[in-house]
Image (tube, rainbow, N blue to C red; front, side, top):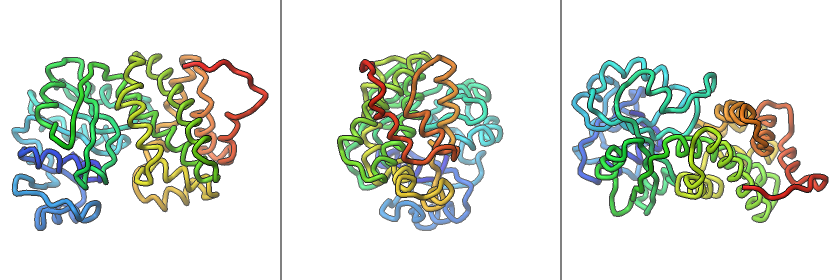
Length: 324
């Protein structure tokens, strides 16, 4: 459900696993492209789907008699889509979230939101999965989490391949928080790159950012170990260091002096950190957590601070003990 870059790359994984795939999207141009040529040329002209893949803009057709519903739409559109999809989802289908974000107004995670509309078993997949590399059939790994371990095993069986390996977990909360917060730290790392700073500064932002990510995850009910795995530090490294990363690239533009609007327009795709930073900061403050990097990103996105303010975490007047 979703024909963006990650949805397209994930559909390729399923197709190569000999799975029949129904592709749903709301762009008639993209749907027609997939149906006529087997390619989503808007994102990846190098992916050529087999006859096992079909595309439609009708959710009733897309969801008919399916085993697995992989959701790959922007987080801020999930609720409105669920309202339409819910009546068509088979009662025994597994829901698999590919989304990395949090609802802006409510602060709800994907699992919370899906539970409002569907009683189905829920799972979430997250990790260092840059869509462009998966489209090129490069090796990748991820974590799939479900409270019921048998559900995670089912997802592993359906989705794992020699080039895409899944490890399982039962920490749904931790995986969801990690996938959301790493975008914010990647944006901060991008700002540092845009300001012209080197690898040392980037490593410092990523490392201290990981501490902030873990603190929020644990406070929300997740496990510390999750943040030391693929969904945590693994995804953080990939998203913070790759030029394919939208959140990092957005941060680079901010560091180079672009306005938030200008940077958003230049990226031209969803930058989840723009919507997730404030609710994540609210969550952190609700638990009395110190998250200086996330706080500075929030100020920069709100326009109340300049990009250079990210460097305040290096303030020499603060002599703190390193904590994790």
